[in-house]
Amino acid sequence: MSEAAGQQHPIGIYLKIWTLLFVLSFFSYMVDWYQLQGFWRWTLILIFMFLKAGFIVAIFMHLSWERLSLKYVLLLPPLAILVLIALMAIEGDYTNAVRHLFFDR
Amino acid sequence: MSVNTEKTSTFTEPGVGGMVADWSSDKQAFDMPWGKLMMWIFLLSDTFIFSVFLTGYMNVRMSATDGWPNPSEVFALTLFGEHLPLILIAIMTFVLITSSGTMAMAVNYAYRGDKRKTVWLISITAFLGATFVGMQAFEWTKLIVDEGIRPWSNPFGAAQFGSTFFMITGFHGMHVTAGVIYLAIVARKVARGDYDKKGYAIVEIAGLYWHFVDLVWVFIFAFFYLW
Image 1 (spheres, each protein chain N blue to C red):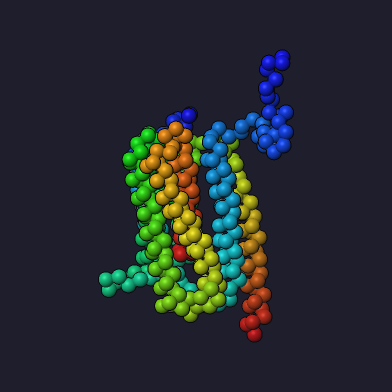
Image 2: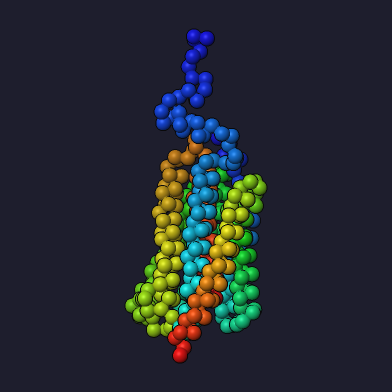
């Protein structure tokens, strides 16, 4: 079958990405280790998280070598989740405010 | 004409066989084995499941009026007389990343036709996955038995901590467990030579699932353990 032509890449790229993921995980652990707080804590956690997720999907799952049609099928629908996150953040904030209003006195 | 009346078009076929033929008669949109596309679609749906869990977690954490327990301390361990925050989770993260690396290489060697290395690498992946689940079982036991954390209450603060923790890590652990079984089956079939004629796309498909499990952990690690 034509599967012989499936994803073919030199082994080295996996070892490099593996090392990179190790380093990024180590960095995110260091964020906790040094108890960074506030702006830099959230920023660094998110940066390392998105970098790791990106490398796993792009290289390990070979998405960067797939055709654009598949990329769109996989990457566009999750954008709807951003709407859910926004709505639930507003709702959570509101619930918290109401709880304080009623229970704090 | 009378000689070649055998089906020239599948549209003439009656019954369920014809229905399947009709629905599948469109042009193929994605140039890949159908199993691979179906795995991607499944993973997309799974993305939504985990996103909804994590969004629900965000919602209850934002609305909780009691203080949220500090994960750094809740998941701390004392090893060799040293107090190490979050150490078990860090080790679990490294184990899962390593298993993703060995899986990626297994896929590569499968397409090269190196069965021996493929079987070895898949087996190592499954072993690391089982190690991860083992450490998670240890973590859960410690939290439930020693720390008294329950889905409805815990001694550290907001009660929602327990319910979201057991829900999210439990669902992820279930995925890892299923993945270990899946990989073990694929490894055995590769060793037996079941894919010699079919091609080794199945190893790549199993790999997609495994990398996804690792991917979900990246988000759980960031949002639940570090946030």
